[in-house]
Length: 246
Image 1 (tube, rainbow, N blue to C red):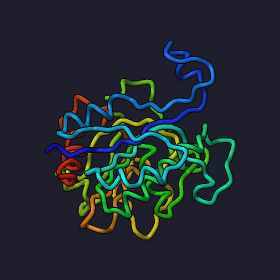
Image 2: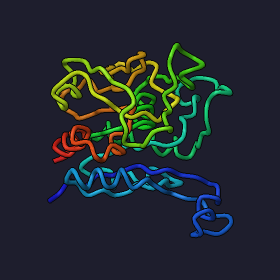
Image 3: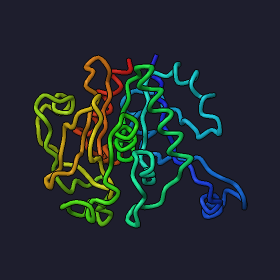
């Protein structure tokens, strides 16, 4: 039996999501997900299922117990109030309903000791859920370069990431430097006691974190390996995740 992987999705109360695609009508809210996440899990040998935003997230908890792993996907900025900060003018659009959904699912996955992979927003949610903090905007809050590189194809590597030698990522890739894409302006600032930083970009931005409990696969990456669909190397992340889920 292939492992069943729950993937968190985007949520938006704006009916423009449906109307712009000629699917919906005025007044509808939307749960949706980029296909790259689905295809990456399928290619690695898993069965992807989309986890919707529910008004009562506790109802979803028993279902999470039946899943073999959880993937927290990318999306809007995380509300700084979730990590004890005041929202600044540099923070992008926030969706409180999705924050509540992702934080509830992440905390449940950790409690249930399910393999957990966080991508882009997912690494930020993982850090937030475990007591860490974020930069609301890298360029204005720190000595960092522009990291939202939408002037290149989504699968195109634009900078290098250096991995800690004793990290899960170094084991996955079999080396300590990898080339990645980049589509973010927020990033992890600090991590809680249960997590550790295992990867940074050339200019020092946190690009990877992992759980300190070696018995549970808990990994977050700031780049988008699911978008790098033509990279055999980046596919190793999903194959390692699926191996843990089995």
